[in-house]
Length: 383
Image (cartoon, rainbow, N blue to C red; front, side):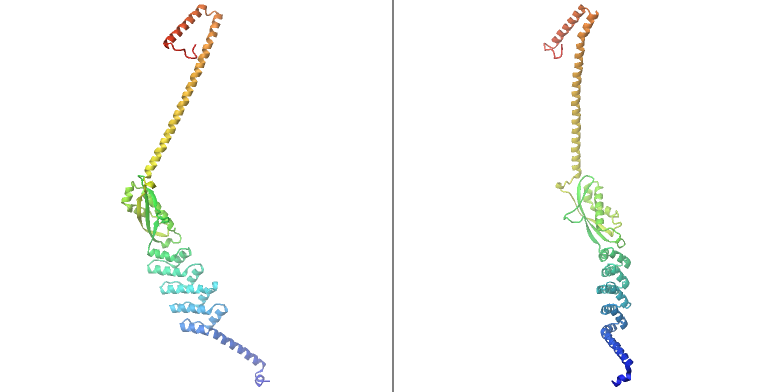
């Protein structure tokens, strides 16, 4: 037996083994994290060994957290802790989440825009675009535009391009009314004198930050401006008034409050082009409508006259039928005369001389009728 073993004893050997294991583990841990610890210490972003070990146990990349914290400290952000950085990583375990939030925080800090890391982290995981949001807030801050983080966050989460909205507030944009698709597309309006005009306008707008979340889009602006121009031209007495003073149309439309409840504020409305429609496109709509109306009236009067003629023809036929009916009645009445004479003979109310006198009168009357007709034959139906 080894003399040393006999002196220490079995218990001492076990203690030495455990102590050696602990010492070896300590050396391995120190060797694993010493480089990261020195890097953090030399950069002013001090991190304890216990924090590094904790990150390792939580399966958080220590190098990622230390690098992100060093970036913040180098930028002047001293309140950025390793715990907050770990929380950003542990949500989805993606290194890009940490780096994106840290980059956005550094950009905001350099521009003197106050935003906390927790706010950026919450907005990032809500699906927002933190880099664009920070840049938009910086642009608004430089342009003296009141834009809080809550408003910017709401605009971004609503699906609007917050950076473009701020840039449009600073530098207004121009919208064609109507859109130039297809090419040469123009508004069609008719003045009171019936002349048809083709108009194209250019609308200068800037973003209305307060209405970006609930306001209507540029399609509504185009529709309202087009409606206003058509209405203004329609109320003009003649097309010459529009051609001489197109600015009256734009001023009238601009004063109608067309940008209410929209995401934009209308700066100006300029008539870019106004012209009379070509002959092939029916420039004088009023004259064409009058012509069509006159043609329709003509056809209606002709129909009425044809109806009256048909009624007259029908009346004529009715009268002819009535004449035939009355003639038939006369014939029937004349047929009753011999019967009446026979009854008169039988009853003694009429003698033979009376009969001869009546025959003479009939013959005399027939002779006079024949002389009056100039020897013409007696009309059929006469006896």
